[in-house]
Length: 322
Image (cartoon, rainbow, N blue to C red; front, side, top):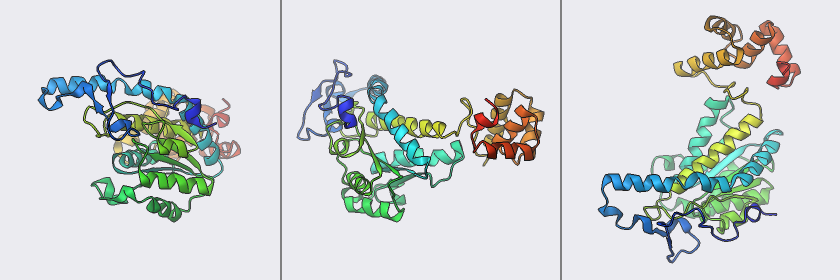
């Protein structure tokens, strides 16, 4: 059954809306995020304090809306993990603000989880230059999305996450269509459960946050909901794949002084040893937190720790006998 059916998103839900945010329908009935919000009437006449208070009230609706999509998000995580375990990748696809949110989440995975930049990728309509500035018409070309996915050799092991607030962006729909034809897992993240994106993706994640205070500016509540969903997807996937020990970033990169200090703190917390012992273990292990933790908790040499980790096939809990 389609995820949108499981979540009961067959028609718009406004149960999370506050009384002051009644929906005024316009000529785009399928684009909930572009309808006018009566709570922000006369926005241009409000004081700074009134605008900020209004935004804060509206933002409070985002987490409950995302909460409604939790079952679909969890299902997506399980499906992504299953594919990544046998060589698949996680690929975000979006245009404009939605595309930039995908780029942000993908770029954070290597330093946070110590994974290859190829494992979690992001495609944005218009290419790299679209990250910093608008590329006119790029989002209107669905064929370019298929071409971009061909360039990275999309396979059935990959997971394609299409991100579009309205759920109608041609570039994103083109990516989902190509992903479906290639047998990849397709996931749609939209603020409208009745959108083409929600209907065409194999899993639909549709937190309906309602109209923005600035009509059509989907970098606001819709963008916040997208960021929350992608945070959940990538973090849960990486934890499930073993890139964490307890609630610690055990595979954190050490590319700068801040991260080097963070690595020491993480190892100190995980091993309950003092800084001098932790620093020595890190140095002996070649700054490999996994090896260093095995050395400290099992009292073995670097060579022995490496053998133990290899025998456990990278499963740190198993290597530690936990």
